[in-house]
Image (cartoon, rainbow, N blue to C red; front, side, top):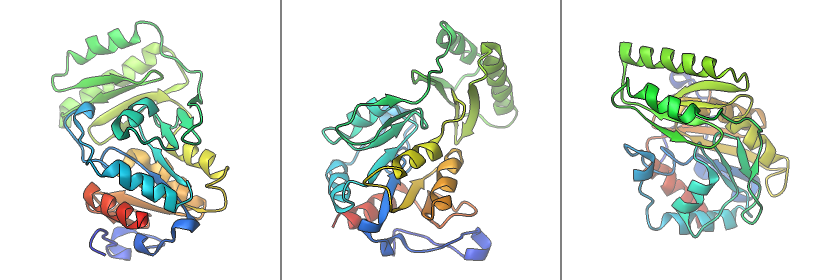
Length: 260
């Protein structure tokens, strides 16, 4: 199919390689990352563009999957609802720190970890030393976006590690993704979110399928495959996965096929 590149199984390290077009909607639970997967990346999170037909397509796909479709994002659930309004879907936000098991269920925070008073102001002061960076306050953690590399990136990493250590909060960790660092609660990730969804209907008894674009999503990929499902990256092949999509447009095309 034109929307998917399976690659060479040996050279790309793919396992259980298959065409997602062969997956049957009533046999899978579909978990979709948002930025870089459903939506094209933008210079800033608030600048992403949602294709006008995407909420309708997602709603139709959810119906075809009997409700077994969830968004698994680093964004807070509140932001996801604004992006895809008026559509509400089962969702996990802030890298597994919050979850909504169904569209009409309340949002539940899965951690009591909180950043100390003044931490946000301290972070903003620190980032003034690094032009080209900016941060998001996600209530239970911070995201630091950057456009630096090489020695400058190493200096930023060291500064952020020192920042986390100075907080004295053992329940926090620093994680790296593509042009982003996350200060977030330890022990929660997109994999734990998928496990929670798969334990309940309508996901229980299905094979999980996780689609995401970043190495930081590795826990979600590993969980989906450990539960007998499949994992697809976006933008490049990642070792050990089932296949990959070349770009978000290809993911949207596949979701559109599922919706029919």
